[in-house]
Length: 635
Image 1: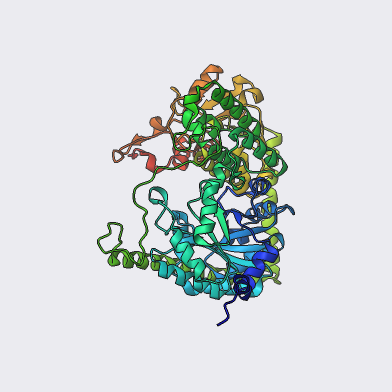
Image 2: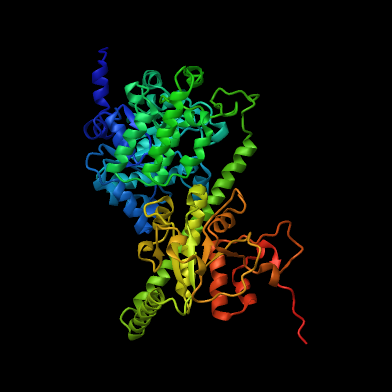
């Protein structure tokens, strides 16, 4: 019997997957993982400089990509660099057509598209994508096979494993038969996340590699460069994908542990070349400084509120000086033996759970999940999927009905007249708001004080950006709109970027957007600062006065910030007359007179139109705050 050489055996498996791996991707071994809001263009370009052979984009929602013009523009801008190759774009999707249509748009910007089958987070459960599709084999087969038929680039998938090795192998073989060029296997189950993360199973990955004929990438347990080499040797995979290990040390593929401040400086240079959202930048800096910020916790809040590259640079310079002042014994991390200001992995605390269930697991193993519990979980996921599909079908039918109506009216005079009236109404609104901005004599002037954004975290900024959109919507709908000012509003700051992302056409809103604080825009004698901590109630809303609202979403409940600032500037303060016109319901545990800026704005606008505080408070005070109107007994 003639024994074939190893090279000859390999050549017999030179299928489409290996042709794509070698000829297009250039046989990559060191790969940067797709990470939500983390593997953006600036980071990818730095990764390539330091040894990465292949990069993935952050996870992109295929449905949002198709339906949101702004989101699609952001994604395509991230794919705009010709030097950023080879590149694979990752989408999450649960419908064949949605995934393929999104992939068709980006295929000229990349070398391949990847189907996310690994995300285990709650958002993936709710949206029914990621690892929550791993039981829908028919659907996944259809997505991959249809993509292979219609795309001119590679089609790949990133999966998590099942507890059983045998089922994981069967899962991988199904995706291979569907037409996957490359398979990335994250060696953790769907339930291994947060405190139950545990170790990834290289045994599962090795089994997949040995039982498929396409290139396989490994993901999981990579903290140092030696882990990359060990993984390649133990599993036999074609490449190793790194996620968190790369975020804490972007030079991991060179087996170097550089000074974090040098890396941050280098990353910020890439950010200047490839503009990046500040939320991305802050998160990267937090990851790089994870050990240093454990030593200097007082700097965390300053870094979290940084709204510009210049601010981050100043904070890093201060941290660098603090590190130089430390004793040598204070600098060392026990686990690694390195100073905390050197790039090294950060170990998150986790429970002792997270172990694997394999084909050989005994029934007495404490980590075993009962069959009954597994059935309930699968039933729950099937029901979620059915509900989601039902909603999608309802939306589809609604769109078809609307299209039929539009088609029937398209050539009629009624339809043309309706469009004309709609355009006239829109123009009338714009003219009305433009007139108000030119003449304040008859209108109320409302200024939103946005100098507090440095006190807010990402969640609070997100809430505030939504409130600003609702505030502007109320003003557009009003017959007597207010002259709106946003003061202390930094363009290209975190809040600005959130507003632009959320609200189409935000840049052209009929609002005076000023970077100066309100006390430099108006005479102090004309200003009334509205704060719930003021002693006196607001008696009326008058033209010629400037009503300043403290744009502060304060979930940490730091009291009297706005009041103290107004008092320091010797500015008149007032509160809404809630207690004067309303009473406590008696059915709530907590009662509050702290309202969102859009609710306060609605109250002011309604009072200006009606001169009636009952109507005004009814328009803006939400019932959940516990205040109601006392019943009147008119004779």
